[in-house]
Length: 190
Image 1 (cartoon, helix red, strand yellow):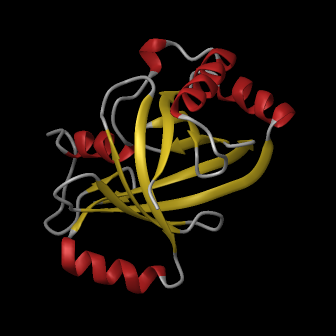
Image 2 (tube, one colour):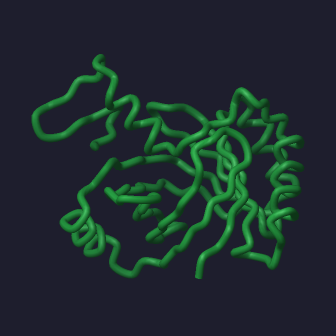
């Protein structure tokens, strides 16, 4: 089944403020150290997420504009992540690997991530989804808008693309050192 998120990703200039807000009003699910392996695809994004809390194969299509955006996604829980990663790597090739520390919170059907990526910094994600509740697109947009305001997220802090895009941009920077077989940015292998 295809689900819908209305979501944002933004630089977090006040992670402690947002964390305190969420600790007061949200259900904390835990902190996850996640490795997302992105595969080459002709359309959309396909990633294999390995973590202690979240372990899924995720395919999604989403525009790359700042602010609220609609994402259509499908996910499959993983049983044997390593074998699946080997198969997808052989069939499609690995585009990039993203490692992050993620705090996960929920308020009803709205999921919140406080992410830290060593080479990129701190981020907040808000995902209002019909995966967890029967909600219209307009209701999801309204929920997302409410939390953007509550967290004081400024328009200039919105991120258009994904962490994979940001790391790929770093990877294309001529100042980044590379060896012959593996590209490395601040400990990340690509």
